[in-house]
Image 1 (cartoon, rainbow, N blue to C red):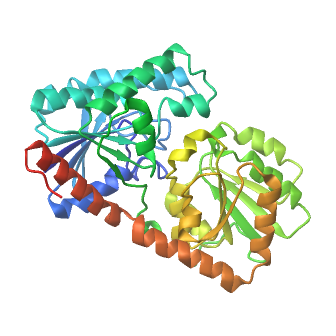
Image 2: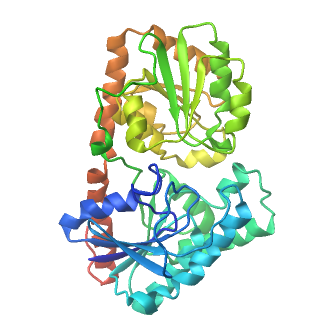
Image 3: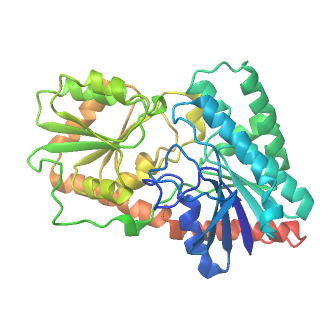
Length: 410
């Protein structure tokens, strides 16, 4: 089976620090199952640490299980919403030259958001080639910019996005969601049933390569809790800094690894606390190496209706693979920390409760903390590795193609 994957923000380990690698790893796992991916991605990405070669309009790079096709795009500033929006449309327009240049003959087209605009090309291929179209939803738009970004739901751009959302949902043969309760949002949006597969984010266990000779940045004589991820407003990290300030007099170190628009504000809020250390974004393997030496991991979310549909953050998988007990500040149903029994969940945004949970972990016997960490590791290895979700993808892809061809498979 030849699958054309359209994902403007797809990447590979050579180009960034872990974001957008879902389909790269899936391609390698599905190769043995005789499923080949052609992954079309934008050659410009604000998350890239290194840019791919884009001398031509379309630039091929072989990978295990298929190929990456980079689309040449104009550069934009990472903090420019206008620049990113323009890039969505530029990518979409150039996709229509893809069939001519590459003479593609896929058996199925899978479009992964963001952005939803690329789904228009998926719908075009569905009609032109008579192949099934699968839509993969990683973030719910336009609900995310309305609730997280504070953009008015009556804004013309949001109104246009709502029309697009309904249009692509209705025309998809199948939807893959990274959120467990996405079906509820789908019903609210188009008011008709659609087949939905929940296939969460995953991690590649081979990335965990602990270097015993590596000099750790952590102090082994003090309890250390680490946050590793983006520092945007949706991550609600101000409550973590406030909790750290409440625990200033205790033997606890706080590490914040990552970059984002809120970073400077967080640094300012932590300026008088010597127990808080900020570290720039680094490779996935380097982060995992640090996590294996830490005592706990932290993740937080804003208290928003958006999260009633669930989340699928890579941070959960990182912490669990490293065997860390986790403190999750969230009001999310089906919080992975609760499901895996690998830590404590406290109310979103409550610095006092976060501080209490950190103190509780610090005072807990090491054997009990280790057991929580092992619960998380066992969970992620059983449910959230690329090998595991590749099996789910195989079943989904083959079933959709069979149904499209008139042979329903259960």
